Image (cartoon, rainbow over all chains, first blue to last red; front, side, top):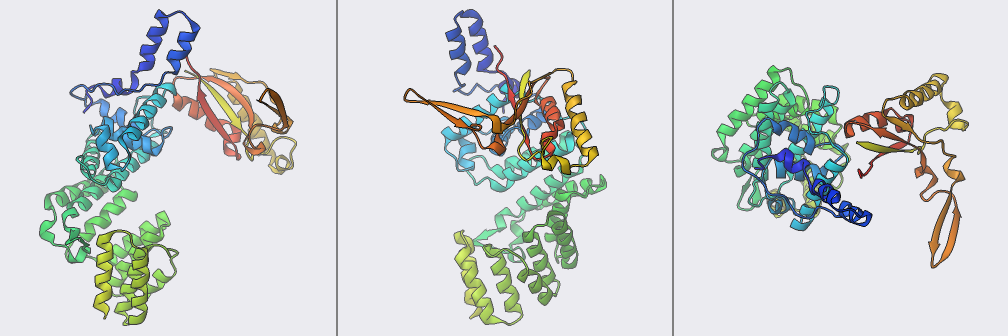
Length: 340
Length: 118
């Protein structure tokens, strides 16, 4: 973890270059030094000053930086991941990641991106951006030594500690914890395992409990934003038995707010579980998600329940055409075979 | 920190155009008032008024030959319409000023370029 992350971010070779300029006299030298890009990474020191973490994360997630840069900087300065680890996690060559970080730091210095928690009138949008970066890190890291989902959760916990009165911060933490708790049960024998079939003994109950505590805190603060809503849905999903009508209602609210057809698809699935299979199929048929394999897999399942086997087979076939991951391919093949 | 703000009009209705005539009187007044307020903001150095992008001439030299074309370097819609300089504490202050420039909300865009410190 960088000891003086602010210094690492803000101090630069540019300053060193300016010192050199003052020693040199010629214009040619000035031009050359000012244009020389910073090519090496500066050394990390040992311990971060805790109070700077909040300023740091808002600086790293400033909208003037590209999203890729925001993610890389956040993981580098707050996550303490090496450039190589970040590159591996996001399937980007180390050199590319190194250049991305150098360019981002250069932008912060050259454009004078402020190092501070944004003032109240900017805070809602800026906090949204920070939460979006953390959630993106949670969802999109693909392994490597730095367990990126764990990094996102660490960041989420730090944010909850630093901004205890922000409901969406607790909402996001709750969402990440509850989903992460089930990560080991999600795959078995190289196949995707549906929620209802998951081995609950592989669920990390302490994480679920911590996630629910975060959700409760968010609700107590009057939170009703998108992360709180998604955390509530995640929490209901780990109940036994699941309250499908309540889930359908929450998915409807989420769909209304996001306009997302994928959320509508989830709503249809919840309605089907609540017993309204025909209605669910009606919803699914109206969605414009032709190239989304989950749509066809869901349709297939609904058709199967309505005993429309030929149509179900066709739908599984379409889903298999579209699916990418091997685990999901195997799962769908299994489902198709079960129809016979 | 000194910034240059480059105002791209994009689809912004310019005074005299049919689109401008379609704006309500309030909206037209607001545009003038906003520009005046910006010009009077401490730290702002106004640029000089430029003729429209259609009045531009672009020059290139290839193999010693000077090539002259009618119009701006980029598409007319993307061309520069105006500029100003702003001395501000940080980028957020420059962003705030940029957001008040009418072109930003009427179909154009403002580019904020930090100036090199020598």
